[in-house]
Image (spheres, helix red, strand yellow):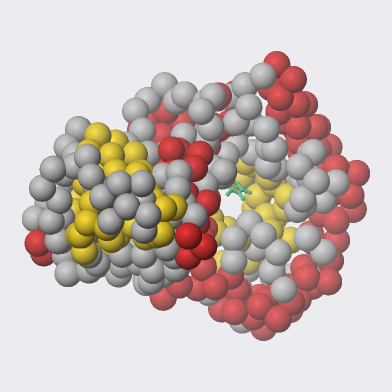
Length: 387
Ligand SMILES: *Cc1c(COP(=O)(O)O)cnc(C)c1O
């Protein structure tokens, strides 16, 4: 891309063409009869919720999922009409906002269900609702034995329509025998609950269980819909899970050299003096910090790409900047492009590598990128939007 067009010291470049390709690949894999729910919580894992949601819906997703009501409201304000499932807790105070915006709640208490029923009735709406079964994640949702009583209560309330029944896997991304058995067990528990509810006359047209890892590994569990996040962004759920289709990483984190100079031997770099030069050292300043969401744990561990070479981070990462040693890289100059995540000159740093330095997972590396960092959206190498 003509990077001269970008006027920022640092930015996240999001290739919408990659998102489109990933969505199409997942859709082809699950087939026409299974709905694709694109998970765009946490600003679409840092990629920019609105453009990602729009592209995902154009490419074959039929629904969206978020974690917070406010995330759903932002999508509605952008003119998105597709069903939006809120997968986490909704405080009673947010119920009116959720109903006004036609968000699909995951109901968890009868008190909350009544509040949704009242709001929907007042608005003259019938609100589709989903119910989550906790089959062994120990987090959100109702225990299997609690579900039937709860569903009876919900079904008796006006203004609500039972639409979805779902569960979530805790170790679908682990391919060991033990973890695989656990996922199979969770699924069996879920299907038992579903069967019991059908027997009692409660019909859920949309049963769903699979996250990205389970979608890839267990086609027999796709049911009527899958909830996929990480693979839409071109990232793997774990090192162990290898999809039978290509994933194109969509996000690059880029910056520009803000200063180059040579420091004498014995010169400490950055807070805490954790790095001291041992010889005349050519250093470049990179204007990215933990205020942009670049993890401080990469201090004295990580690398960036400059002129197609890997330059080590020296000293601590600060809120707005850090220093790299470019003694081994020829000709580094002000405003040279710096790649923190992505490709340059045939070299590549993946979100997975940054995750190792930061002692975390690729999910957190991308989802951590803050709102200060401009998002530059591209398609076929051309800039199509900035937010
Ligand atoms: C985040 C989330 C997903 C998506 O998980 P991926 O591993 O990114 O595919 C699916 N379901 C629930 C309930 C989630 O919270």
